[in-house]
Image 1 (cartoon, one colour):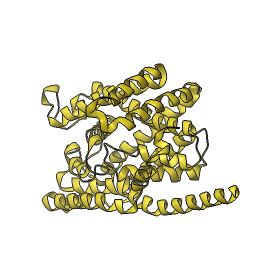
Image 2 (cartoon, rainbow, N blue to C red):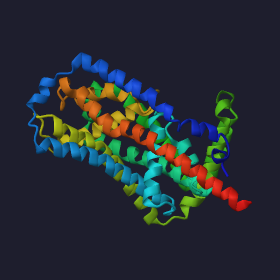
Image 3 (cartoon, helix red, strand yellow):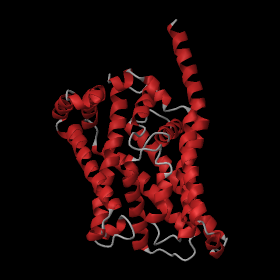
Image 4 (cartoon, rainbow, N blue to C red):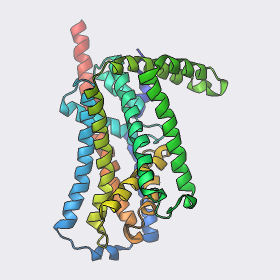
Length: 363
């Protein structure tokens, strides 16, 4: 079994501490308060008709994130061969997302995901394949969709000011750099999982012996073994398994980004987007997510709120951009912080009770 599952459980538990809610919350609120003091103009909201249209699209924005969660729970059931019931899969996704929300986006919640699934009596091989394959198909989604959207829409999909390639600024360079990085490591993992896992294992073992990568030695060697185990598990799956896994992945990401479209429809009176505009808004959401992929703050707290208005300034008046950003983050981010703080103590209690019963059976 991989050392991901055997060692350093304490570090995974550290990521599930409820006290970790405070740092991202403080960062996010501080940035929002500062931005409100600089640009908030409530008169823009007075232009809205406070009617069923606004309430409907606010409800739709919330529904998008409910659907996103259900898509991920469905994917977890598919990848685990229905080892989890729907309620259990929904609970585990809440904990998984909480871990991602309190970790820097460059770290994510993969380590905790290994720990979570192993505690639910999922076999080591299946746990590894679920987590690694989830990472791979998430990356495949972006690697496929972002170039397609760029080809259709051009640089304007990154930021409103980027009408042609010569307009690309620091945001555009960051976007393209991260995209190339995603293509690189996505290609390596795809090659390792589906084509030649042993070659990837050898490569990662060689990298682990380099002096400047010494502190990553254990992680690199663990990943090398994980790739081989996952490859053996995934290669034997039927095509229907891969189609369902990728279909739920597409569903989860599309509804996530469409939530921003819903908020614009709800709260911006002067905008009535057509299909092309909706496509640009979704593409911008993806571009912003890509740029914040290596944020040093937990869950990109503060950074996502700060960037939001600039990405959608041709659709959202500057005076209410920070307010819409706050509502978006309340739905998409702070909900998981609150839900995690409620669900995790209960999950730990059930886990302790379960282990206690298992020990009693062994006596």
